[in-house]
Length: 408
Image (cartoon, rainbow, N blue to C red; front, side):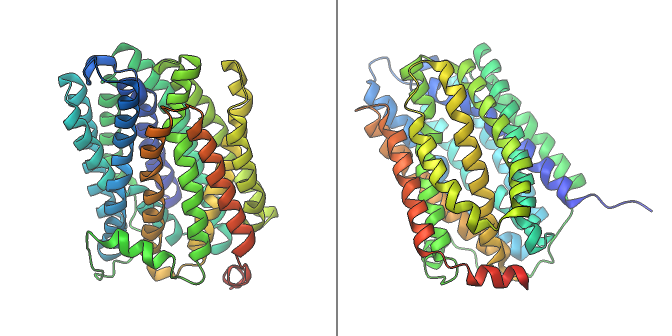
């Protein structure tokens, strides 16, 4: 008798390869635009303009994800997880290939298309999370989401290091490597990833679903506080994730190799946190208890990034960011999953993706403006937004419905 593939193992492999591809791109993006390596921009382009173009280009991915992710979530409920996951990965593959061509041909307009396409088709993580929710008991969801977080972290360990190393040879080389990995991922999903959901055949698809989801998110009595917390946390963390590379270039003169090495170091701590600490704390404390401490810790640790006067001191501050973020994200997702009806997991996680995509789309543009005033301002804004997320959560979250679902 042939043994069926493990759903959790398949989810882990899929997320790992997907995030490895994402991580490979991180070290090259800021040098490509902010330092204008390979001349995609004219030499006369000012620093302020380069920062703004980088911000808009970064926001493009999240903006199109805002439209695409909820559509993919609905389609995953309607037609099954596996089929839609394969389609989204194919779109992501095409986007990476276009990205590489844009660098070779020095075509800035093609670069925007190359980020828009995988953004629209990049709702694969929400599909994977829905699959994981399908096979997880309520009490195990935070731990299983933590395992996905470990795959995320492992991808971030190797991805930026590979991207930084290959990017020193040519900035397009990491994109070709990412395209190859995505092709492998498509094959693995076809062979290894099991269908975890009985397709309903129902669900209305619309380009306006993202806006409708935002409205739904804050109209849900049991979930509106969690979604607001998610929005503010993602809004703040986006300032850090998207413009930390610019901060490193401006303050410490980092190149793609050093950016890749530092993000690889951060990935080690993310993997340790979500693979070990998240699973450990999930057996000791409920998710709401954990979040009351980790959101505050994340806000303070983001501000602490500004303290080092020499680059090596970042090795002391970055683990704190990774640990508090690594504990916060899976527990927020776990609460959303537990409070969601089982038959609507794909739709609800699509709503969550809409909230996060909206939060990710706005900060890069703001940061592109304020970074020209002071490169520290995006990090300061990051801490303020996460602090506000903590205040909202500790003030308004009611745990009665959560406890009832966990004990059910």
